[in-house]
Image (cartoon, rainbow, N blue to C red):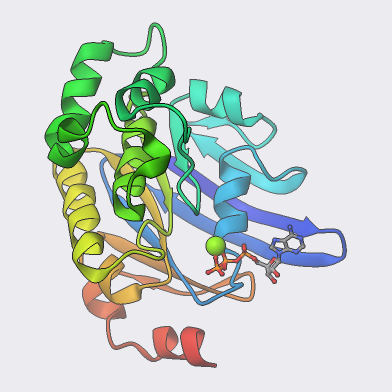
Length: 231
Ligand SMILES: Nc1ncnc2c1ncn2[C@@H]1O[C@H](COP(=O)(O)OP(=O)(O)OP(=O)(O)O)[C@@H](O)[C@H]1O
Ligand SMILES: [Mg+2]
């Protein structure tokens, strides 16, 4: 369970996140939607321990993590896949995956098998140099690397960004499969339609605030979504 309460985050004089509340119960897939510049990435970077300082509270399974750094947050069981899919370009797919796995947190061979089952494309390309793969393959690898830490909470920033529609479908089928396996997920997306197709609950952010929230069937076609994106 991830609980964000009254979170505020600034860049100097610019307040990007203005006291928001978000809950991701265990085993659920929660989406955070919003247009360009709404504050979605800043929120995730705060959760992952990258954006500091912040005010408010961020609790992971009850423990306060808002003062921890990225590596400490990862050790507590939260894995973050940033915008723009970070992979270690000169290393192979398999080297990228094994590099991310933590001694003591799960069995490396089992974790690797889970990633390859989820993304057969990565299994086929296990010896391939990561930096030479397509954007879609690199996104799969970035998610795979996060899964190698056996996270209790998986946090994804815009996994669809810059990908062709057919590849977006492959990536979102994998996200839906992870959700069915019981993985807790906080997903940021600009593409509301695709996120609402897989999530249990969604929040809509605009100019640093949550302007709407609810189940996907109530949010779809809602005025708040249209307004948050167009207004
Ligand atoms: N490093 C930075 N320095 C100053 N301002 C920033 C910085 N990063 C983001 N901002 C500002 O903070 C606000 C929120 O940005 P953020 O990147 O969190 O939005 P976002 O919802 O992720 O947008 P996008 O959909 O484009 O990724 C914006 O007004 C942005 O210009
Ligand atoms: Mg962003």
